[in-house]
Every structure is written in C-alpha cells, then in structure tokens.
Length: 424
Image 1 (cartoon, one colour):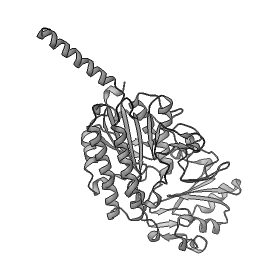
Image 2 (cartoon, rainbow, N blue to C red; image 1 turned 60 degrees about the vertical axis):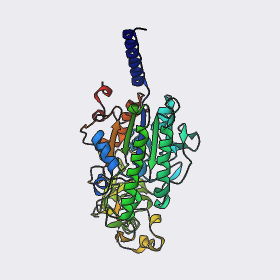
Image 3 (cartoon, rainbow, N blue to C red; image 1 turned 135 degrees about the vertical axis):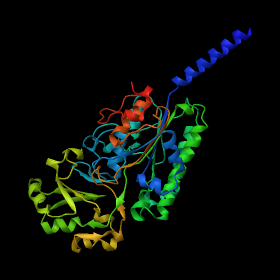
Image 4 (cartoon, rainbow, N blue to C red; image 1 turned 120 degrees about the vertical axis):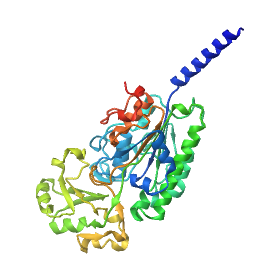
C-alpha cells in the first residue's frame, strides 16, 4: 500500500472512530446529597465541587413547597409538582392508604413517572441506588439495578457507612463496559442533612459530612476519567433543599387545643397539615389561628399558586406554614421526656432540646435553595443560570439521554445548562 493510501486509510479510520464515539450513548450520573446548602461549599473544603464549577456550571436548585426531603426528591425524580405526584409532605394522611411517613415506595405516586421508570420504559439501562421510588411494594424494582432495601440515614449514622459504600457502587457501575453499563445512574446520599439539623453549620460533624460528600464526588470524577468514553459522560450533583437556623418549635397541639380546633395533625419541617374533623369549619379555624405571628394559615381551597399542592384529599384542610426562625415537627419526633409539653407547654418551645437548623419554608425563603452542579458531556461550560427548579431536573436529564420525559411532566428542559448542540 502506498504511503498516500495508508494515510488516507488512517484518516478514514479516525473519522469512523470519531463518528462512533459521537453516536455512542451518553451516560448520565445524578448524585443527590440530602440537605446541602450552598453556604456549606464555601464554609468547608470542597475541591471536587469547585472543580465542577470551574470545568462545568454551578447554580442553585429551588425546591417545591414544602421544601422538605420527600416532596422535593419526588419532584426532582418525576418532574412533577406535588399536586400531581401526590407526595405532598414527609408526613400526610391518605384517606384510603392511611398515614404516610417518609416512604420511598413508588406506589405512593398518584401520577407521573420517576426518572428510572421513564428511562427503563424507553430501553435505557438504569441504576437507582437509594433513590426515591427505586422499589414498588407491588411491582418490585423500578430499575434494572437497585441496591439493598435499607433504612435511609437512620439516626444520621448511615452518613459514615452508607454514603461511602454507595459512592463506591457508583464507581463500580461506571467501570463496566459501555455496552452493559447503566446509562442512567441515580444515587441518593445522606449528606450533611442530619449534622446541620442537630449540630449546626459550624460543627465539626457538619464539616466531616460535607467533606466526605465532596470526597465521594472526587472519586466519581476520578472513575469517569478512567473511562474510554469519558467524553460521553455527564455528572449532575445536587440536593433536595437547603437549610436555615431555627430557634423555637411551634407547639401545634397546644395551639389547636386552646382554639378548640379538632382534627388530625401531621407535621414535618416547618409545616403542619391539619385534617379537620369537620372540613366545613376550615374558614372559622383559619380565623381563630390568624393572630399567631409564628406561622401563616393556608386553606386548601385557597392556596397560593406557588404552593403547587392542589386540592386533593392528601392535602390538609389547613396548612400551618411557619416563619423563620420557627419550625414545626410532629410530636412523636420530640424527645420522649418532652412530649408532655404538647398538652401543657407554651405555644413556642426553645429549640435547644431538638433542632438548631431546619427547612420546609416557601421556596423563595432565603436558605431554602440547595447546590446544583453540572459537568461533562452536553453541559454548557461556564454557563450562567440563576436557578434550576426541582421540577426541571427530570426533563433535562431526559434530554441529555435522548429520550422523552415521563408522562406527564410539569417541568421543562433547562436550556441554560446545556451546550448549544443540545438545544435545537
């Protein structure tokens, strides 16, 4: 073969290889660290997150209302507002199924599809590790790969063991050959949530949790760099909500009892869902509670548009929404030796016996936004995006995978995150 012909053949092979790489399926990895406010990135050592910012894009995620874990995680995963997916709080009452308490079972959805469900339905091999909706009690695993069904962050101790294990599992999956590797990897981590709640932003426990989360990101980045198709991998790192300091817990049981309001109460974060024994008395009950300055009283029949909760049976007839620095927690989560205060204590109880920071306020409340980083294939390096709504993550991931979002979906593709070639 002549030299010219050999050069031409070599160029043809290079072009063909380049075309094959361009057509190779993209792998999208989403890491969600619970309760990670942007301030923690600046407060502690986070070199991996700073690298994502330099080489990709940094913005903030805006959670739904209430800005607590299960509604937010389900909104991120489904691309739907709580009014449609049905997980309206960490604790609520369903008239048929009964009490909901921090459940991740996919069967609690009233509509919409989790990311892993939409991707699997369209033939994308998916891994859902600790991810909300990874399993269904009636239909089994909702992704090709799910990890053992373990308690999530029980007592906060799992941050020391479960998080590193799950980070290693993400790395192991990435190192599989592209033809068998899951091309959507969703992983949930306990993150700094528990330490921030109980120790505060300056505590050593918080530093350890933040720095461990950053180390997990660093290891995932190092694994991606080892891949032959590393230029076809996208990494998103986010959270479900931020955090802000609190000083007093609202004694909802005492307040309702004094006002003569009868019903069942489910409280979490900074909100309380009140299911009245007589829903026809909702307006009277709202008036009776209007003088309390620690919280707003919202009626299901007249919710503001930003609430996106709808008027379904899972939503309380009244919603008490605390103002910072007040918060609301279900009585059963108080220390046992303090629970008598629910009947006999003051309206406001100092938080020094429970939490020092919390979340759940309306999404525009300072401190409720969380971290969001995008890096790698298809991402607009150095792009400027004010925020990403939780509801927009699902359709944006679907665009990166080249599939359709779930059915239905309320969010939209956040084009500001994407490189020009991804936004026709």
